[in-house]
Length: 255
Ligand code: 13P
Image (cartoon, rainbow, N blue to C red; front, side):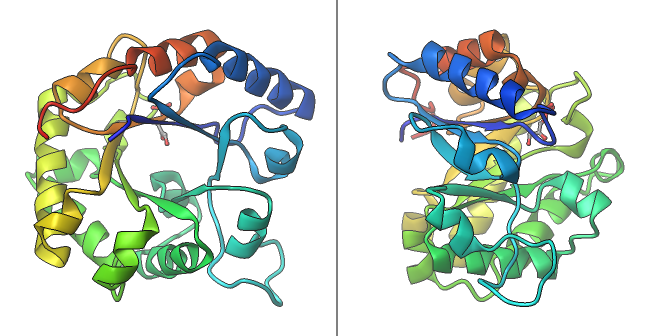
């Protein structure tokens, strides 16, 4: 599997001009990079305005395709704009917008139906980790997000799982590659339990949380994961391009 490097710009930059500048510098920087899939997830409003050249993803989506849902954006709309990916269940959406597991499950199903590749975020809080409940938290989030998603739908969905320990997000305290590897193995075991080993092995599991150019490669080579979900560092074009370049030629060591 080609490493997948996803930029989650969150609610940044604050102007269209800034967004275009950032997009174009990343595009220039990764122009000659081969064998790495780069996906940019800007705020919704910039999606149709950045121009081509890099794959796009959204940071959220609603679960219906149209109708009386003021303020929402549908999977069909994203697909129509050329989005390939959509981040679903990010911990910031769970925390600030009350997204519960049932909502995330609806969004996953809607995204798959529209032909978008969902990037499902799962991760434990600091408290869950301290109490030794990481596995329990990850399994609950994974199983409920994929409820009633059949094996045949999953196989064509292009689903990506992003392991984002909440305590590592924006904290400057990245998860160690060993711990990320443990979570990755556990998540893949859960997927194998749900869908069988064959299907589970085709799903990319990526890491997010204080990723930098310095630690980027370790999550692929040491933690055996298939890519990265990058927040803060994706707003600094030089740093993000270094992260992408760090992934060139890497394949996870577990396969
Ligand atoms: P940081 O890379 O800023 O820690 O954010 C990670 C994240 O939330 C990506 O979705």
